[in-house]
Length: 135
Image (cartoon, rainbow, N blue to C red; front, side, top):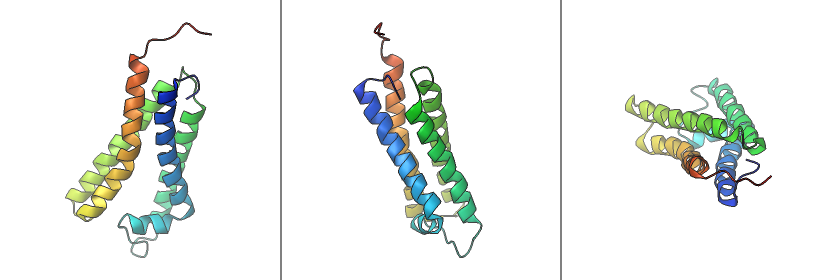
């Protein structure tokens, strides 16, 4: 996110904070996060492994975006958008199958949407912003 105007930096920072914060919590306390999102750790003890896999994915994405320069930020934001959009879709499909209550489905969707909105806006601003000739 280096080399961006301040408002893009703020949006990307919000996305990274949401992504990294939730992922760090999920990695450190997977059973607690599962319980808060409507999953029972006792019914599926293997799920904590999957929560940690997801958490590492999001931690790595957040760090890569934070360290990205102007030449790579767009590609990383596209990747983040795809990841979060598929997370929303997965939560929706899980709700349709009855795997989660309606409230839990919205909680799952909200966690992805909280990162999705600022990253979409940031990417849009990057794409429409005219490059400056400053060195």
